[in-house]
Amino acid sequence: MAYDPNNIFAKILRGEIPCNKAYEDEYALAFHDITPQAPVHVLVIPKGEYVSFDDFSSSAPAAEVVGFYRAVQKVAAQLGLQPGGYRALSNVGRDAHQVVRHYHLHLFAGCDLGRMVKKGLAPDG
Image (cartoon, rainbow, N blue to C red):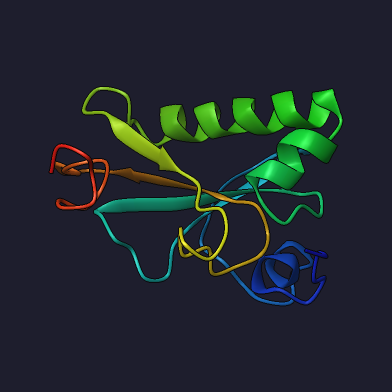
């Protein structure tokens, strides 16, 4: 799947659409989700043009991968998420409901986040 330079995250990176920025460095931009699913819901996106986790992990230079994941950790630390815990989630493809075709991680925190997978879908559910 080809990267669409007109996706909403690309427009945010270019400054065409505003965001409520939580963090930024040379590798990543983090901002609060406009429709949060938890008390804390932040998106962390790499500054490069990658469609998904698969694309990012197989195509990005090693320094960019390391820089991105260190940025994710800095966001979690800056927001004080470690004491109560948090979830880092990346949706890849249709079945996972990836809406924006620009690789991103969701950071969720601030409440009991429940099961990893909706009850009834897990083998033991």
